[in-house]
Length: 90
Image 1 (cartoon, rainbow, N blue to C red):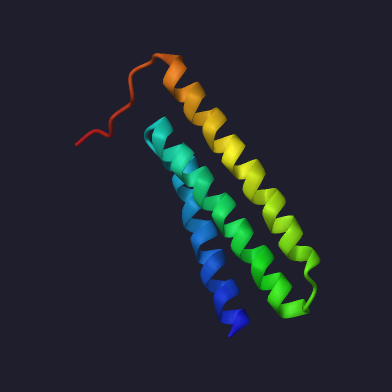
Image 2: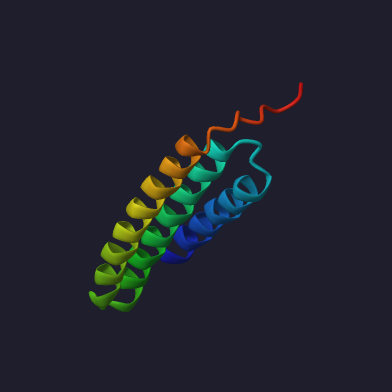
């Protein structure tokens, strides 16, 4: 069961990386970054379940804090940049 969950999370990582690279707007990239941090937390939790070590949960808490601050910082940067969003062409 843990293997299936890891495969699903890695699929989410692949889609998040794709959105991060392709994303037409900066807001898309901020959301993709948040998805990648959430996937990292999920992988830490799965590692804790698989190994039986609670150390991975401490790492997950650290990743959560870093992800929260990074998302806020990048969103603030996008807001202050003042450049118009690049909208996708129809």
